[in-house]
Length: 454
Image (cartoon, rainbow, N blue to C red; front, side):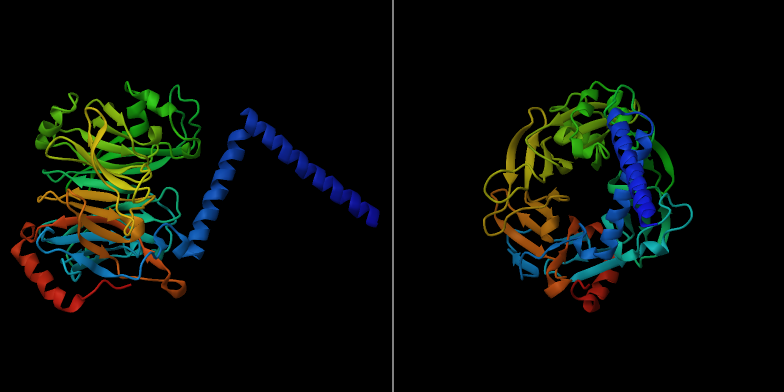
């Protein structure tokens, strides 16, 4: 009897071993059932990452190890910093804050994703509310807030776009899988990014094996309706820049573009860029691809649905290219810096040459390091507001690199308060940009809101 059990056990082991070997050979040889095995592995891996982030939320990319005991406004040079209000979002949840220069909360918005989700959503099984956050937000003069939700650990992670009133009530929602960034044009149209799994191969791009994440440029009407959707892999593949698709890192083949920024080219921006980039025209959009060719920025023409200009440079995994008044482009270089400060920096690039004409990389005392997110804004006084996400801070620096304002988010969590939420997005706004009615409201609220809270 025992011998039969041993024989049967060896027989089962042999079957499993042969199945493993056969599956390996099939996968390497790209023969049936290779695609099913590969998809099963990807699905299991994604599920494990999702469950892990839910079990250990402070180990997700929404929180980073606390770097300093300092909190709130730590530097404020009133003579050189640009007075205003600072809008920011962070990894602590689906919230947005409007800060005064002394770190007080003038106004805030909060809306759990579970109260927005419905059957129209592209995401079928969203993660819990404490695993969602607002990736970017835009505040309108009347206090309405436009924002996009992200579900940490999920793939795809884009959870949708929502417009809230000043009291965080939902005015409209578009629950396509919006992610990373959007911009509001002067006529009220919204240009955003969505993604979904693509199960069809790109023509003549054999190394991108489906399924992979396909990014889209999406045009949304002022009332939240999708009016146009352009596949970005196809826009690249159908252009003279299609060779960029052959320079994707092996570890990014399942997310080959990782588009993380969009900026609309209005008439003023087009005139600024025209001397640097002859291909520019009003109505195009400037895009940032984190993974494509190690990090590329490009212009997309919405009429032809093709990429018409692209540039790679001395940066790596960049975010948030902004068009400056002189026609240069300001961007956050996450991983391309090798020198004093740390691995991250903000650079001003001449797009006609790709050369760097200005940069800021922090200092030995306050280094710059943000692997996954980051943003910047050139202010009207020539200073630059920087969002250093992993450091949980916002900082303003002069053209000479002097630190004149710094805010470190005053939220701590986990064991001995050893984790700080990342700051996802920051923007300085002049108070006069808001209506008188909204200014009265947030001035009243400021008296009771106080500091940012967990």
